[in-house]
Length: 544
Image (cartoon, rainbow, N blue to C red; front, top):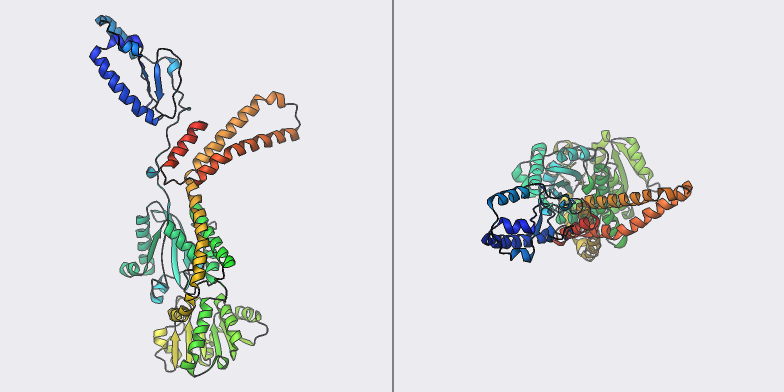
């Protein structure tokens, strides 16, 4: 509600008693101090009989104080009729010359704490927090990442979501305006849809928010949170998470898109600027090391005596072949659902004698091999006690690097001569490599600090995007208005010359705005000074 209060000298001295005038002066002085705290500047208005005029931008009220001469006047009270007439005149509309220009002094920016600020959070589990038995219950195949992400983003407190599911982790990144409610809703969703009790989930899940969630995502992409530090496959998986979440049907919005892109960029930078990825580290390489370490104990055979069977023909199978060939194993057979997939993998290694077979002959191939690696996309075990007991023709090692598990290792270990391993058994193998990589981890984390800071500055800029847009709009209005003033003088210019003038004026405006806009993009909204900065820019450029 806009209002204006003004007192003429004569009205003030004649309408109030001496005592009332004193009390009014005290009240007006105290009120004036409060109003000055909110006013960016005095508003000079015409009229010599009014002094010390100030404007409050939030309530648009003007108070005019009487002069010292009037306050000291001791004139007698006017007649009753005159007092009524003067009182009536004071209730009339104020003079036009005292109207306040509301555009010149807009209301202040809404306080930061009163905004619904979007927050990033992450919830999930990994080889560090949950066993493979729990991880496989939450595992989601890649072609379902998008649909699960959409379902999670549709929860009441969530705005955006993205899913990452690998053999060693299941993670959900999301944006919400209430982290506690968001985590509760996601946890309940996982419990309901994946058939895992809330008690089991709570004991296995990690929950992160804000900077911790962003830092975690970058460490994951950089391979610093992997079972095998520096492994390269997780970067490809994080990139797929970004691509799937940002597709047309994906559930990532502006914030998650930027965060996932930052994570992928950080992962690439870590691998290119440090030596953390050297040595071909991966789950597949750790699995081959496990066999190399235990084959003599389990089978009484050396690596060059082993017949190898690989179930699956994907990236992990390819990495297995890469790490097996330098160890001169006796033979390698790739077993796959499609003949084309198996042949394609074999063709990548033309100098190696690699055989192929279909899944129909899986048990025959497994039964005649010394070591079988399982890395298919099956959601349930394909090797278990019952089908192994009739198939095994010799002692064998079964190494499962899939999640969900392809081999029921508990049942398989009951079969005579069989020793089964799952992905959690790789921890002992990689422990020896971790110590010498710790120095590289510190180097990688130092690089990631730069990426995190860059992302935080971008998040801060989001709070000021509306003001930046209005500042640009206001500047463009002024530019166009000035161009119109000189329309007649510019009428003789050719189209090319007019285009040159347009570019010139736009360039000048852009240069002038660069400083204020750059400052607004970097100011931290959590700092008390940021609101003052925004209000100052509003006042200087007269932006509503």
